[in-house]
Every structure is written in structure tokens, then in C-alpha cells.
Image: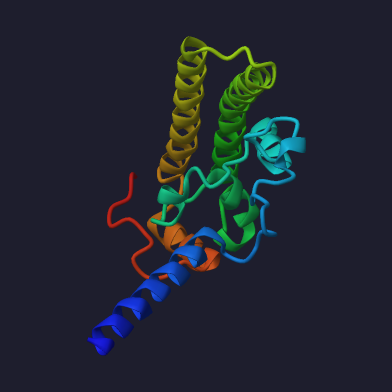
Length: 187
């Protein structure tokens, strides 16, 4: 009986310790949220880096599924143009894709920022309603999907510009392991 009681007490203490550890990863001060300080952001849901990336039309990791599966992005191809031995025609096509990508993605990023600012302002002013919440988050979500699709589409377009050997070299230059390139090319 004493052994059973000791086991139960030991299990309860273990569960209490595990539960306490799950609530605090040790990085936050006791009583403070890991979000402390973020309330000072101009747009609460977006970091300064997020805002800069949206304004500049940068990928923000939105095309990782393409990039890490061997579909090069225009920006990185331009950065590696010499190592990839791009022809003048390939450089021009890649630059054209990059310019088109920025022209498409910067306005989408602007819409995301504007809607996030509106959402933030409505919450800050305590004027948010279920309807405006639904409408704004639906617009933000749709714009985020549109932005991701745009970045992915330009990675896909690069497959028509590069040779299979250049794609393989790109994958190696970027440091991606085996299985990081498509089995078929879009030539």
C-alpha cells in the first residue's frame, strides 16, 4: 500500500513538473508573455522585417516548397548568374521575370499591410465587429494566398529559362541535398 501511494505521489509530482514546464519555456520572465514589447509595433501582427519585405516584394519564405524542391527563384538565379553561366538571353529573361514578380507582388503586399493596419486600428479603437473581423481576415488570407501563389509561379517559370544542368548546379550552389531537384524540367 505504501508503495502504491508513493508511485501515485511520484506520478503527480512528475505531471505537475511537466505541466509547469510546458507553460514556461524559460525564455519569458515570470508573469510576462513572450509577446511583451510587440504591442509597440506599428502593425501588431507584422514585424518591421515583415513590413520591409512586403514593401519590397521579397519572398519571405513563401516559395520554400518550390525552392527546396529544386525550382530556382529569379532573385537567386540573378545572384548566381555567373556561376550558372547564364547566357545573355537567360539573364534578360530572368531579369524580366524578377521585374514582373516585383510588379505583381508589391501591390499585393501593400493590400496585406493596409488590411492589417485597419484590423489593428479597429481592435485598438475597440470598434471591431464580427462582420468586419470576418471581412478583413478573409481579405488578408486571400491576399496572402495570392502573394504565395505569385512567388511560386515565378519559381515555376524559371524552369523554362534554365537547362536541367543549370538547375542541378543551382541546387548544389544553394547547398540543398539530394532529392532537391525535379525529375522533369519544363523545357
